[in-house]
Every structure is written in structure tokens, then in C-alpha cells.
Length: 412
Image (cartoon, rainbow, N blue to C red; front, side):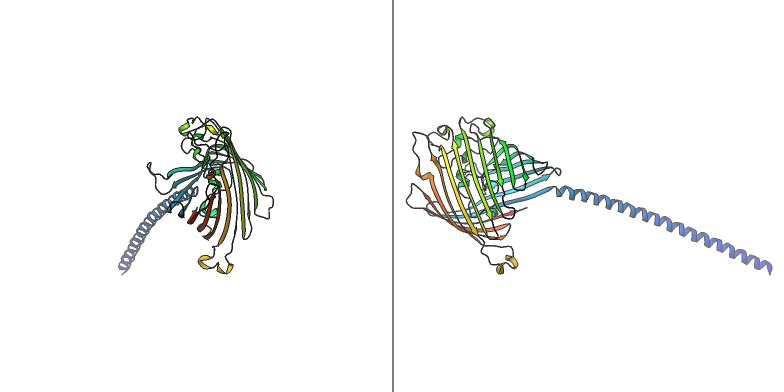
């Protein structure tokens, strides 16, 4: 009996040992499995961290880019001229921030929707601006590249949501040749809360393309402008009342005209000077702005094509005012950011205000425009426009009547 009991105990002990061994083996297998699973999970976590780092790098790079633009579509119905639909311009803006103090700004413009060497319309694709800003402080910053001439109001702030009327004022076309791009370098800043300035050294104009009707407009050089006859340009803006939205500005340009495309000379030995004064007032409902500009050529007989009779001096001015009349009760839902702004603009401009001795002035170049219209901004970034213009000149007894419709937009 004792032997049987001993054998039974030994068998039970052996079975227990075997069970413990099996359990330990299973635990080892589970631990190895868990270790593999943890290693795989850690690998996945590391991969996800890497992807997140890549995404954060992408997001950081994307945040340095800026995309924007603006455009205008116009319909014109002219009594004594063509009636047409025109995709006047489409501009795309690209910017890049190399650092918090070095920034690139560019604008690529397409005019009149179609570009062809045989097209009679002045269509083109061009870089309207491309410059780099070096930001030091509020008082002094540097700018290098192709910049907008800081003359008048419209040339620098010409987006369609920023001015009243379908077309830009003719003073800002015939006297100040908007849009006017200059290649060069300069400084700008706002050293005081009520004062800002810009001062550039730039390439000059091509006097061989000046005309009696449009003054210096044809003298703008878009491709590789010459630096043979450089110029200076600048402006000062004053903000005398901090509590009111009123600004006064003085701006100017002075330089030679013996320049042409691709760095050559045009042979137009002349100094061209342009001075302008302007102001703007924006109240809660009323907006008023005005510009006066005067230009002078030292040697007008050297300018333009033979027999062109470019003016020795040009003078232009305009005054316009608009009133927001949309009731607050209408500003609901889709019209919550809308407005209705009827306006009137009166302008006079004469590109032959003075002519060279021994030449005869063309009275058709002494012009007066009266514009009555309305701006209907549906949002701050999209506007519908309509206006009626009475266009007079001293050589005609009756005005040329023009009805314009338009829409414009800006995005960034």
C-alpha cells in the first residue's frame, strides 16, 4: 500500500512539474508575442511621428506662401465708338516669406483675355510687380525689384474693389500712366503714426513712345527697361487726425527719357517731371477723394514719332464723392456685408496744356469727363458697378456718351 501511495505522489509531482513547465512555456510564448506586438506598435508610432513631422514641415512651408489676385470684366456701350465686352484684366498674386524680414511679392497680369502679336488691342501677359522687401523696423525698410510708382492714388491701389466706377479715372490714365511699374530700389516706412514715406531710385521712361493724346503712357517699359537715364520717385502721406479716416499725400517723379527696351537708348533727350497732390476721406457713410497732377517735358520736340507734337506740359485733376445709402435693415443674410454707393466724379485733363513754341495745340486733347454711377459691393471682395459718362473735349460741340457695366473681385 505504501509503495502505491509513493508512486501516486511521484506521479502527481511529475504531473505538477510538467504543468508548471507547460505554463511557463506558454507564458514565454505570450511574452515573446507581446514583445513583438509592442515592437511593431513602437515602429508604427515612430512612423506616425515621422509622418507628422513631414506634415508639420509641409504646413510650415505652405504657411510661407501667399496666393491672391483680382480681376475685372467690363461691358461698354459708346455713342461715338465701339461697344464691347472686355475681360479687362486678370491678375494673380504670389508671395513667399523667406524669413520674418525677407519677403517676395509678385503679380502676373493678363489683359483683354487674349494675346497675339497681330492683335490691335494692347493685350499682354506681364509681370506687373516683382520685388523683395527687407523689413527692418517701422521707420526704415528696403524694397528692390519692379515696383509700382508711388504717384497719385490709383497706381498703387488699383484693385477694382478700391475705387468707384467701372473704369479708372482718366487723370490716372493720361496724366499719371497707371498702371506704372518701375524697376529699381528704395526705402519706405512710417516713422511716426501720422507720417509715411516712400523713396525709390528707378529706371526712366522711353520718350520716343510719348504721344500728344496720352502723354507719357506709351513710355512705360515692361521688358528689360534701360538704365541709361535713371529717375527718382517718391511720396509722403500725412494722417493729421487719428480719430478720422483722412489722408493727404504728395508724390512725384523726375528723370530722363533716353531709355528703351532691352537696355537701349531711344534718342529722346528730355527730362520728364511729374508732381501730384491727393487726399482721401472715408467717414461712416461718406467717401471723398481728389487728385491733381502736373507734368512737364524739358524738350518736347525730341519726344514721340515725327510730327507727334507731345505736350510741353500736362495738367489734370478730379474730385469724386460717394455715399453709402443701403439701409441697415437690408443687410441681412446674403446681403449682410453688402452696400450701395452712388457717386459722382468730375475730372479735367489736358495732355497738351502747354505746347512747344511754334506748334499748334489740338483742342481735342483738352477733355472733361462727368461720371455718374453706383457701386454695389456684394461683399468686401466682390463688387458690381454701373456708370454713365459724359465725355467732352474742346474740339467737339457735343459730348460722347458712354454707358459702362462691370464687376470686379479680389481674393487672398
